[in-house]
Length: 279
Image: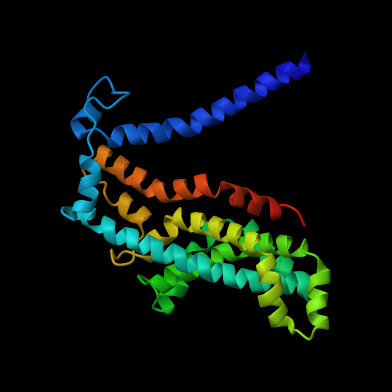
Protein backbone atom coordinates (compact mmCIF):
# COMPACT_ATOMS: atom_id res chain seq x y z
CA UNK A 1 0.00 0.00 0.00
CA UNK A 2 2.81 2.37 0.89
CA UNK A 3 4.53 1.54 -2.37
CA UNK A 4 1.39 2.40 -4.35
CA UNK A 5 0.99 5.68 -2.47
CA UNK A 6 4.64 6.56 -3.14
CA UNK A 7 4.16 5.72 -6.82
CA UNK A 8 1.16 8.07 -7.05
CA UNK A 9 3.01 10.80 -5.19
CA UNK A 10 5.91 10.49 -7.60
CA UNK A 11 3.65 10.94 -10.61
CA UNK A 12 2.02 13.94 -8.97
CA UNK A 13 5.48 15.46 -8.62
CA UNK A 14 6.32 14.69 -12.26
CA UNK A 15 3.04 16.23 -13.42
CA UNK A 16 3.68 19.36 -11.34
CA UNK A 17 7.18 19.79 -12.84
CA UNK A 18 5.82 19.29 -16.37
CA UNK A 19 3.09 21.87 -15.84
CA UNK A 20 5.57 24.28 -14.26
CA UNK A 21 7.76 23.94 -17.34
CA UNK A 22 5.20 23.70 -20.14
CA UNK A 23 2.70 26.40 -19.11
CA UNK A 24 5.11 29.37 -19.49
CA UNK A 25 6.24 27.99 -22.86
CA UNK A 26 2.65 27.52 -24.00
CA UNK A 27 1.75 31.04 -22.87
CA UNK A 28 4.71 32.50 -24.78
CA UNK A 29 3.65 30.70 -27.96
CA UNK A 30 0.02 31.73 -27.41
CA UNK A 31 1.00 35.38 -26.93
CA UNK A 32 3.31 35.37 -29.94
CA UNK A 33 0.39 34.39 -32.21
CA UNK A 34 -1.78 37.32 -31.08
CA UNK A 35 -1.80 41.06 -31.68
CA UNK A 36 -1.01 43.54 -28.92
CA UNK A 37 -4.68 44.47 -28.69
CA UNK A 38 -5.68 40.85 -28.17
CA UNK A 39 -2.96 40.36 -25.56
CA UNK A 40 -4.14 43.43 -23.62
CA UNK A 41 -7.85 42.54 -23.78
CA UNK A 42 -9.78 41.22 -20.80
CA UNK A 43 -10.37 38.40 -20.16
CA UNK A 44 -7.18 36.85 -21.50
CA UNK A 45 -7.34 34.55 -24.49
CA UNK A 46 -6.18 31.03 -23.71
CA UNK A 47 -6.14 30.34 -27.44
CA UNK A 48 -5.32 32.91 -30.15
CA UNK A 49 -8.65 34.27 -31.49
CA UNK A 50 -7.11 34.91 -34.91
CA UNK A 51 -3.66 33.26 -35.04
CA UNK A 52 -1.14 35.35 -36.93
CA UNK A 53 2.53 35.10 -37.80
CA UNK A 54 2.84 38.88 -38.08
CA UNK A 55 5.16 39.11 -35.07
CA UNK A 56 7.55 36.55 -36.51
CA UNK A 57 7.55 38.28 -39.89
CA UNK A 58 8.29 41.58 -38.15
CA UNK A 59 11.36 40.06 -36.49
CA UNK A 60 12.95 39.40 -39.86
CA UNK A 61 11.60 42.39 -41.74
CA UNK A 62 14.62 44.45 -40.67
CA UNK A 63 12.53 47.58 -40.18
CA UNK A 64 11.89 49.48 -37.02
CA UNK A 65 14.13 50.08 -34.02
CA UNK A 66 15.72 47.11 -32.26
CA UNK A 67 13.83 44.67 -34.46
CA UNK A 68 16.28 45.44 -37.24
CA UNK A 69 19.04 43.90 -35.13
CA UNK A 70 17.48 40.44 -34.82
CA UNK A 71 19.08 38.91 -37.96
CA UNK A 72 22.48 40.30 -36.97
CA UNK A 73 22.02 39.14 -33.37
CA UNK A 74 21.21 35.64 -34.62
CA UNK A 75 24.48 35.55 -36.54
CA UNK A 76 26.33 36.92 -33.50
CA UNK A 77 25.03 34.29 -31.12
CA UNK A 78 25.98 31.45 -33.48
CA UNK A 79 29.49 32.87 -33.94
CA UNK A 80 30.06 33.44 -30.21
CA UNK A 81 28.54 30.16 -29.04
CA UNK A 82 30.23 28.14 -31.77
CA UNK A 83 33.67 29.66 -31.16
CA UNK A 84 33.35 29.32 -27.39
CA UNK A 85 32.27 25.69 -27.72
CA UNK A 86 35.14 24.72 -30.02
CA UNK A 87 37.81 26.43 -27.92
CA UNK A 88 36.39 25.10 -24.64
CA UNK A 89 36.19 21.51 -25.90
CA UNK A 90 39.74 21.59 -27.32
CA UNK A 91 41.27 23.02 -24.14
CA UNK A 92 39.17 20.83 -21.85
CA UNK A 93 40.15 17.69 -23.81
CA UNK A 94 43.85 18.41 -23.42
CA UNK A 95 43.48 19.38 -19.75
CA UNK A 96 41.40 16.29 -18.98
CA UNK A 97 43.95 14.05 -20.69
CA UNK A 98 46.80 15.62 -18.73
CA UNK A 99 45.02 15.36 -15.39
CA UNK A 100 43.71 11.82 -15.93
CA UNK A 101 46.69 10.17 -17.66
CA UNK A 102 49.82 12.13 -16.78
CA UNK A 103 51.60 12.29 -13.45
CA UNK A 104 53.40 15.52 -12.64
CA UNK A 105 54.12 17.57 -9.57
CA UNK A 106 51.06 19.39 -8.31
CA UNK A 107 48.64 17.74 -10.74
CA UNK A 108 46.03 17.07 -8.07
CA UNK A 109 46.39 20.56 -6.66
CA UNK A 110 45.93 22.13 -10.11
CA UNK A 111 42.98 19.88 -10.88
CA UNK A 112 41.11 20.64 -7.66
CA UNK A 113 41.95 24.31 -8.04
CA UNK A 114 40.23 24.25 -11.43
CA UNK A 115 37.20 22.52 -9.95
CA UNK A 116 37.13 24.93 -7.01
CA UNK A 117 36.41 27.81 -9.36
CA UNK A 118 32.96 26.31 -9.98
CA UNK A 119 32.11 26.92 -6.32
CA UNK A 120 32.32 30.71 -6.75
CA UNK A 121 29.21 32.56 -7.95
CA UNK A 122 29.85 33.36 -11.59
CA UNK A 123 28.66 36.94 -11.44
CA UNK A 124 31.18 37.89 -8.75
CA UNK A 125 33.76 37.96 -11.55
CA UNK A 126 31.70 40.26 -13.76
CA UNK A 127 33.32 43.56 -12.73
CA UNK A 128 36.92 42.22 -12.74
CA UNK A 129 36.37 40.65 -16.16
CA UNK A 130 34.94 43.89 -17.50
CA UNK A 131 37.97 45.81 -16.26
CA UNK A 132 40.34 43.27 -17.80
CA UNK A 133 38.50 43.35 -21.13
CA UNK A 134 38.51 47.15 -21.07
CA UNK A 135 42.26 47.18 -20.44
CA UNK A 136 42.77 44.72 -23.31
CA UNK A 137 40.40 46.76 -25.51
CA UNK A 138 38.19 43.72 -26.07
CA UNK A 139 34.85 45.25 -25.07
CA UNK A 140 32.34 45.15 -27.96
CA UNK A 141 34.32 42.42 -29.69
CA UNK A 142 33.67 38.77 -30.46
CA UNK A 143 37.02 37.90 -28.90
CA UNK A 144 36.16 39.42 -25.53
CA UNK A 145 32.80 37.65 -25.25
CA UNK A 146 34.24 34.32 -26.39
CA UNK A 147 37.14 34.52 -23.91
CA UNK A 148 34.74 35.21 -21.04
CA UNK A 149 32.55 32.28 -22.09
CA UNK A 150 35.56 29.96 -22.29
CA UNK A 151 36.84 31.02 -18.87
CA UNK A 152 33.44 30.29 -17.36
CA UNK A 153 32.73 26.96 -19.07
CA UNK A 154 36.22 25.42 -19.04
CA UNK A 155 36.16 24.05 -15.45
CA UNK A 156 32.89 22.15 -15.97
CA UNK A 157 34.00 20.86 -19.37
CA UNK A 158 37.32 19.70 -17.88
CA UNK A 159 35.51 17.90 -15.06
CA UNK A 160 33.17 16.06 -17.43
CA UNK A 161 35.95 14.96 -19.78
CA UNK A 162 38.28 14.06 -16.91
CA UNK A 163 35.67 11.64 -15.56
CA UNK A 164 35.08 10.23 -19.02
CA UNK A 165 38.75 9.76 -19.88
CA UNK A 166 39.47 8.24 -16.48
CA UNK A 167 36.95 5.50 -17.27
CA UNK A 168 38.69 4.50 -20.53
CA UNK A 169 40.89 1.37 -20.43
CA UNK A 170 44.54 2.14 -19.73
CA UNK A 171 45.68 -0.88 -21.75
CA UNK A 172 45.01 0.83 -25.09
CA UNK A 173 47.16 3.80 -24.15
CA UNK A 174 49.93 1.49 -22.96
CA UNK A 175 49.73 -0.45 -26.22
CA UNK A 176 50.21 2.77 -28.17
CA UNK A 177 53.21 3.69 -26.02
CA UNK A 178 54.74 0.25 -26.63
CA UNK A 179 54.40 0.84 -30.38
CA UNK A 180 56.42 4.01 -30.00
CA UNK A 181 53.63 6.60 -29.96
CA UNK A 182 54.34 9.76 -27.98
CA UNK A 183 51.97 11.53 -25.63
CA UNK A 184 50.43 13.74 -28.29
CA UNK A 185 50.02 10.88 -30.75
CA UNK A 186 48.32 8.77 -28.07
CA UNK A 187 46.08 11.73 -27.31
CA UNK A 188 45.08 12.45 -30.92
CA UNK A 189 44.86 8.92 -32.31
CA UNK A 190 43.72 6.86 -29.32
CA UNK A 191 42.15 8.96 -26.55
CA UNK A 192 40.19 11.42 -28.67
CA UNK A 193 38.43 8.77 -30.81
CA UNK A 194 37.56 6.77 -27.70
CA UNK A 195 36.33 9.89 -25.88
CA UNK A 196 34.20 11.07 -28.82
CA UNK A 197 30.84 10.52 -27.01
CA UNK A 198 32.09 12.47 -24.00
CA UNK A 199 33.44 15.24 -26.23
CA UNK A 200 30.12 15.46 -28.06
CA UNK A 201 28.24 15.67 -24.76
CA UNK A 202 30.57 18.37 -23.48
CA UNK A 203 30.22 20.35 -26.69
CA UNK A 204 26.42 20.23 -26.56
CA UNK A 205 26.29 21.28 -22.91
CA UNK A 206 28.77 24.11 -23.51
CA UNK A 207 26.83 25.38 -26.52
CA UNK A 208 23.55 25.41 -24.60
CA UNK A 209 25.13 27.22 -21.66
CA UNK A 210 26.64 29.80 -24.03
CA UNK A 211 23.31 30.28 -25.79
CA UNK A 212 21.59 31.07 -22.48
CA UNK A 213 24.05 33.78 -21.41
CA UNK A 214 22.62 37.25 -20.88
CA UNK A 215 24.33 39.36 -18.22
CA UNK A 216 27.93 38.91 -19.40
CA UNK A 217 27.25 39.85 -23.05
CA UNK A 218 24.96 42.64 -21.84
CA UNK A 219 27.86 44.22 -19.93
CA UNK A 220 30.59 43.40 -22.42
CA UNK A 221 28.74 44.52 -25.54
CA UNK A 222 26.62 47.62 -26.11
CA UNK A 223 27.05 47.48 -29.87
CA UNK A 224 24.54 45.73 -32.14
CA UNK A 225 27.48 44.44 -34.18
CA UNK A 226 28.41 41.98 -31.41
CA UNK A 227 25.31 41.64 -29.22
CA UNK A 228 23.85 38.11 -29.12
CA UNK A 229 20.18 37.32 -29.57
CA UNK A 230 19.41 37.18 -25.84
CA UNK A 231 20.54 40.77 -25.31
CA UNK A 232 18.85 42.12 -28.43
CA UNK A 233 15.52 40.59 -27.40
CA UNK A 234 15.66 42.42 -24.07
CA UNK A 235 16.18 45.68 -25.99
CA UNK A 236 12.80 45.25 -27.73
CA UNK A 237 11.10 46.59 -24.61
CA UNK A 238 10.33 50.27 -25.05
CA UNK A 239 10.51 52.95 -22.39
CA UNK A 240 6.74 53.45 -22.15
CA UNK A 241 5.28 50.54 -24.13
CA UNK A 242 6.07 46.84 -23.80
CA UNK A 243 5.34 44.91 -27.04
CA UNK A 244 4.37 41.66 -25.32
CA UNK A 245 3.41 39.82 -28.48
CA UNK A 246 6.63 40.79 -30.28
CA UNK A 247 8.83 39.92 -27.31
CA UNK A 248 7.05 36.58 -26.95
CA UNK A 249 7.68 35.85 -30.62
CA UNK A 250 11.34 36.73 -30.18
CA UNK A 251 11.55 34.50 -27.11
CA UNK A 252 9.99 31.57 -28.95
CA UNK A 253 12.38 32.16 -31.85
CA UNK A 254 15.37 32.14 -29.48
CA UNK A 255 14.15 28.86 -27.96
CA UNK A 256 13.98 27.00 -31.26
CA UNK A 257 17.67 26.09 -31.54
CA UNK A 258 18.22 24.88 -27.92
CA UNK A 259 14.87 23.08 -28.02
CA UNK A 260 15.83 21.16 -31.17
CA UNK A 261 19.23 20.32 -29.72
CA UNK A 262 17.70 19.15 -26.44
CA UNK A 263 15.07 17.00 -28.16
CA UNK A 264 17.38 15.34 -30.68
CA UNK A 265 20.56 15.04 -28.61
CA UNK A 266 19.14 14.66 -25.10
CA UNK A 267 20.78 11.28 -24.54
CA UNK A 268 24.22 12.82 -25.09
CA UNK A 269 23.41 15.64 -22.67
CA UNK A 270 22.33 13.18 -19.98
CA UNK A 271 25.34 10.92 -20.51
CA UNK A 272 27.66 13.91 -20.32
CA UNK A 273 26.18 15.12 -17.05
CA UNK A 274 26.26 11.62 -15.59
CA UNK A 275 29.86 11.06 -16.63
CA UNK A 276 30.79 14.25 -14.83
CA UNK A 277 28.95 13.30 -11.67
CA UNK A 278 31.25 10.41 -10.75
CA UNK A 279 35.00 10.13 -10.46
